[in-house]
Image (tube, rainbow, N blue to C red; front, side, top):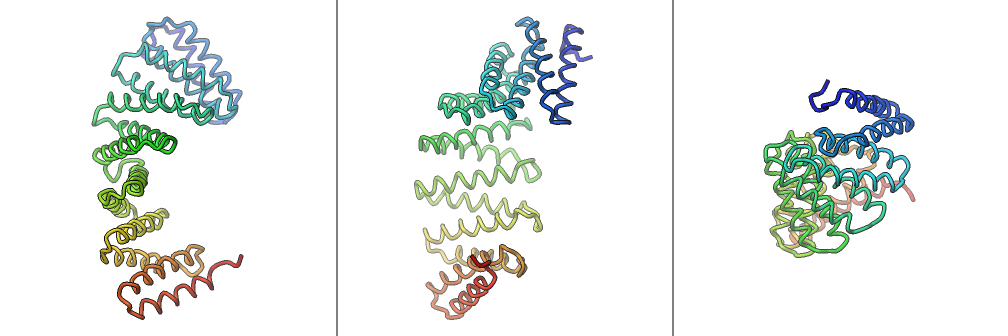
Length: 320
């Protein structure tokens, strides 16, 4: 038996709910989820407010309520989960692992409710909670990147809603912190890098601060470097890098950026078979780069090859 529960009968009862929840996860049958909730809700109803196991149990029940909401989309489940997690925060020891977990879980629940209701107060509260969870998480904890990522995602959502660049600034700082504490083999590292690139280029579009675009190119270069040559997502990363280089070329007119973008597209075309549905698009990208270089150099070879590439793209493109 676990040391967490002081009362064996209570532990057995809660474990019974756990069995049904495991059955639900294995079978997907909502009836098992309903039975788990029935047992767990009965158990927490009998617990004293100062029971040491109560915060953990509240988290488990709220998680199950969130799972039921995914099936029913009944807001009452999220409302109840929110109430239970708010209670969990109020009774958990500040700074403890269950306290941090409860902060994060309540943030997740409020984000789900915000998607349902578009109530801005839920989004604002979620940002506050994710910030607190990150602050109370040790720097060497494997949970810190995820807590910071949740904060970034929520900040980005609020930025899209109210266009306050302070939210975007804060998200970018948090992504920088994520990158400083993760390595190439960290789970979701590519997601963190990709999201940071999006944030930096979004801010560049608003401010035209070249430093953001240069940092985005650095981030994309890391992403490409850390991605296996045969990974299915690698072409997309290379494509994003080439577009960022072209954006910088448009800003600085430094031919090195244009040359590098053309090299990336040359590599794309070389690695794409004639039968691939992606080949016409990649041929057009390369043709576009060559035509831009022609505009600068007036070398007919670039223009002639661009025309040939576009003709090939037209032959391969499906008829509308």
